Length: 281
Image (tube, rainbow, N blue to C red):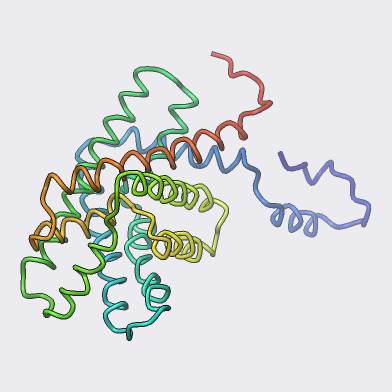
């Protein structure tokens, strides 16, 4: 807790206005960040299923712009060793739209509603979290499926761009174990992004771009953004539905959840509540 400017030692004889400015520049504590996100989580858990569903559908559609942004930059660059590094900047587009637009993205919800659950470990709260997860995941994937269809099964893009998008889709596929491990890192970074935003102030866009850029250039699979790529391959005949579930969705879902829940939600909840007095009921 920050000291009260009325009572703190004033060795430099600062006036009240200067003391106030001093307090404004003190970095907010981990407890404050935890409470901001926990309160947001409580609000999300109270939303109706239709409200969550429409927001989740919007997020799934918006995440298609991550694939499209990366693909358009990649397509416009000459073949070179740095091509992927530059094209990765376009991957952040979908995340910027979703986060700043306050749309429901499944991987963000591996942190936000989990903090209220950890604060109140009851079956009722667990059921609320599972309902939110199921609603958001289903509608995110539906939005991703619709976006992929719009760019794969129509004449919106010419053959050269279609080939580029197909290449990016195939590059994202790998065996189960590497897919799972990479997804752990992707879930970790997305949940860290959510954790950092309350203290970001004017740097919100920079934080979103930096962390999601790392996901792109490292090739860490993200369940929703990656599903747009995988669905694109399905629509184009380059991937079967069983392959989508076994090679992409299952390992990526598990890895994203482990990265977000265990490496961000659980650890940061532990550090925020360590030493805190027990809650009276």
